[in-house]
Image 1: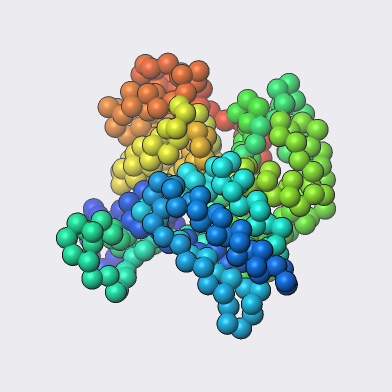
Image 2: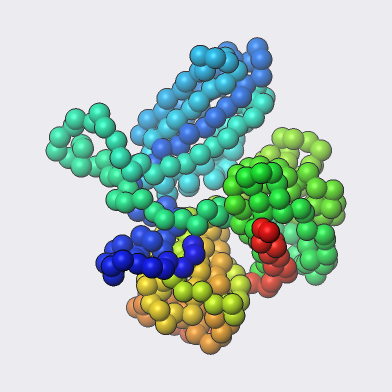
Length: 381
């Protein structure tokens, strides 16, 4: 978010934190998920049956509260699915799982298009429960102040031994046109590798789905994707919509937290760090890093000016803009404002990635990702 100026009064620490954080899934508040669905003509009954079968399975998922299915009164091909969750983390753990991919597969043969939206609940009326039942309905405390930018990433692995060739393919392409339409624009694409893992982070102003479709339609991007196919560990056929859908669904690496400090610096460098989590510990690790980054944003002396934490299953990636490079302050670069959290961090990492000690320089070396390309779009005229 841009620097905040001309403040009438000095904000409290809580108010300052709210202004800094533009995105987070870790406030524990209720989550409302909205899915807009366009069903093929004549496939309404098939869609309804597939939905009912899915509901039986999702009812047992931890954190799930309720679902509602609605059909348009104007166009019977348009449907709306809403669901409520106790908080965002259990929903994200489910929706990003292979189990979910298999669960929704029967619905895709009757769906023309979908759009998913996720919201923390800030205010509500109509709930008259008293006591513990109502107390459990935790709402987002205050509206967050964002910067109008959506952050998203994709990650996948390539065959060992192909890393150098893959890096060359990913670095050598003509960037797509930044302007998608009158309201959507590509702002920045940052691409990193860690061993045979590729992470592509993008920043979009406007409609993320429109931007992703725009990029996928560009001939030069299509060529890059085709050139990558022989080196991917997960096979895919971009000419097969179902194969492409499954690949990109499993490759999605959502942003679970973003914070920008009140200060800016033209000398800031962009880096990415990879934190392979112990099995089942990815979300907990991402939450630890997110809380540490919030504390860093409150410190005017912190070299980290901007941080985004991405998480999916046991893959956690932290993208940072930092002054002075990574090695000047390994603890800050790793996201460890509190030295007491070093052992907690290493305890959450995969045993093959880090031993349980406090050698920050070694941890930084293990986590450091190689920058392949970082391209920023020219600002609007």
